[in-house]
Picture 1 (spheres, rainbow, N blue to C red):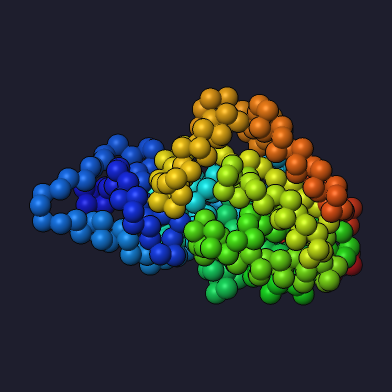
Picture 2: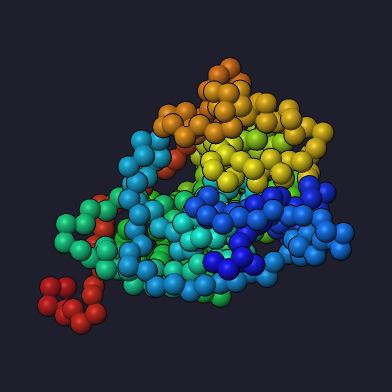
Length: 369
């Protein structure tokens, strides 16, 4: 990589957040061997000025060898997942998937939300994998490390093509999204939902539109997500709400109001995960705190460390999703009690895989229909 292309190792000024982006910091990926540091030579700082300008989103189209990812983590409730994109233009500052961009030699900071990889042949690969001898269906999670309905989907329609394959095979799937774009595909999702073969979980982190713009700058506004929950529920789709991540002293005070609003909109399930700060997410999030909430940044991070055994992050199965200690227990109690109070007792939906039929390959005849 030429020196001019090496991402900045030091963060830009904490006083200069980029409009429309979760971060303006092109933090170096952890596998990068070269680095650079900013220095004031008395001629101003053009790099800092550039960082304040929102980067233009670039879409890189990619053909992949496989699309189904298998999960063996004991604290995740699905075995199979599909991510039609890598990176996410929503720009959620807290996103635990940001470090995956390091594997592409791209920044988990600004690049993660402005350089999006689109897996344009996802539906073709899925059809092949579902048709392999010995394949056994179980619920496929769509969007575990990216939002399948981020802005690029409006034009590329990769997620829709994937759902078309799943619908044709009567294969169960669950979608996690912060976007209202899922409403576009109600013609596919609604029939599957009524048959208990599809469910949608809408991520609802705050009811405060200003906080949402700072924390999730290009995701749907809170009121729009609530309308999406209502639209899906009326169409017969099982809808859950994800109050994730729970960030102490930022969105944590809203837990009860969030669950009440989701239930009133038609949600029937709910879960929440405490803030996770793996790898590069930690410095990115702490810089964001200093930019937007300097008066409470130290307090937030002290509480995070309290829930993470004195560290900023806990990668261990069993505690990474819930945290540990007294404060984490209190959060879990608040979530559970509020969910029960508003009729959101379940955390997920059981979907039906018994009707699965393998896809018909091109040229396959009608003899056995």
